[in-house]
Amino acid sequence: MQTKPHILFISSWFPTKKTSAGTFVEMQILALQSRGCKCAILLSAEVTLGNFAARSFNKSAFLKYRKRPDITYVDNLTIHKLPLRMYSFPERKRKENLLQNARKSIEKYISHQGRPDFIFHHGVFDYCYLTKHISKVFRLPVWFMEHSSSFSEKVFPCANSFDSLESQKEFVQNADRRFAVTKAYVDRMAQLFKVPFEHCPNVITDDFFKDSRKVEKASHYFQFINIAVLAKNKNQKLILEAFAKKFKNQPKFKLVVAGDGKLLEPLRQQAVDLGISDHCEIIGFQSRERVIQLLDQSHCFVLSSQSETFGVVIIEAMARGLTAISSRIDGPAEIINESNGFLFEPNSADDLAEKMSEMVEKYDSFNSEIIIDSVKKLFGPDAVKNVLFPNA
Image 1 (cartoon, one colour):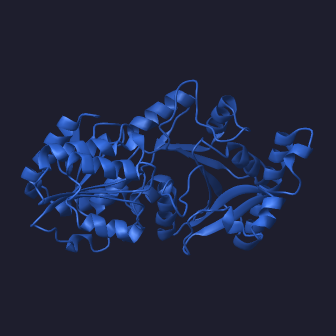
Image 2 (cartoon, one colour):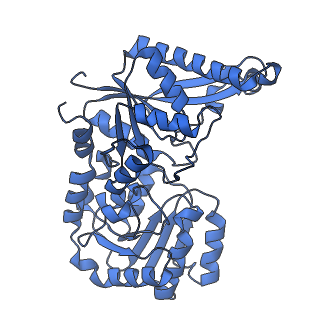
């Protein structure tokens, strides 16, 4: 491999204009680029010719991903020229079209940007068949990284009709390197797939550390914050319940819940029902810049998820010097310790309320600079780059 690795990413997740799912892949690309790697990501979608024409041949209407000027994107839009129902074997033809178009997309990329050293495939959830094909055609090694917690011995998540439990297992087993984001998940993936995995944590980019040491927290109020998808598994209703138990009718204490998802209005109504809506703000999706501003205005990050593979939002908050409270689950349990926060029993509003109250009492005993230094050492761009490319 060259001194500066050239990486083609293929991912089951990537942020769109309206959702933040897959931000960890975007951040990994940015972090590795900042340390000298050359990166690009294949963004895939499909459409019939009729629907494509109806949208004035506008690719962005179907490739609805959030794009940044500092990332190279390989637009891989497959256009089915004829309705698939006209073929004797529609799914066979669909797969043929998808693979043929992917090959052309990569050929075009290589002609302009050169040949990647390997494919970095994120998530067994989708595109295993696509990565396998591209790897074979262009003779590219495959690295694999898993993030999803939706696994059982007999069921793996899958978003297409071309992969199966057997083909997914084979894909992972045949990968040249395999990674998981926590030590607990390394062991779990090794047991599921019957092959070794390496530990490589998720990453925070340099911009999250910019001027974080200069942030002075307000002393006339204390603000808790949660930033996550507003979904059942994230369990934000528990935070509202806990906050109400200890801080109702105490305007000095504030709670901000930010994120996109179907539970935005139900959570707002819950705040009203609990009588905390005057100092509990439930807001929707926020830009990366606004997230940093919100963190700088806050004192403690709270995560109430029922399960997490890692917990990127926690390390983002710590990069701004915040303490953290999380349910005691895989991922956060490997990040939070006595120097940066507390863990509470999952689904226990009473225990979370006690930990929030304890945080207010002991907040001054935590050192924000120690928190920042630790998270940068463990999860900053250099840490991840050194795991993936120790000799580069």
